[in-house]
Amino acid sequence: MLLEIFLIFIISFLIGYCLDTILANASDIIYNDGSKGFHIGKKRIHHNILGYLLVILSLFYYLPVLMGLGSGMIAGHGLREKGFWFLESLR
Image (tube, rainbow, N blue to C red; front, side, top):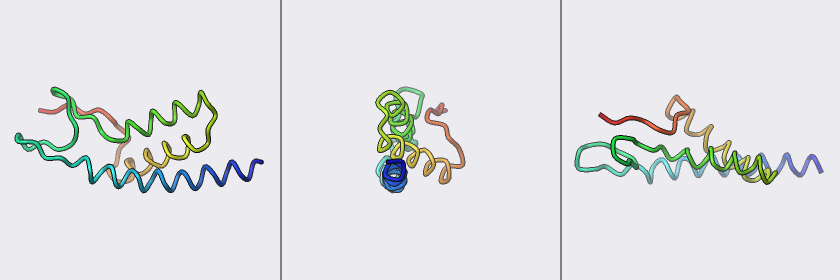
C-alpha cells in the first residue's frame, strides 16, 4: 500500500515537472507593452499557482496524484525561475 502511494507520487511528480515546462512555454505570451505571461492589471500571475492549488486540494482529499503533480510544478518553477513566487508586480 505504501509503495503504491509512493510510486503514484513519484510518477505524478515527474508528470507535474513536465507540465510545468509546457505551461512555462505556453504562458510566454508577449503583450504590446513588452510584458510576458498572464497578468491582470498591474499583477503578473505565474503558472505555478496551479501547483499550489493542487497541493492544497490534495491536503483536503488525500490524493497523492494531486500532491505529486502540484509538487512537480512548484519544483520545476523553482528550479527554472530561481524562486517560488506566484504573483509579481509589474512596472
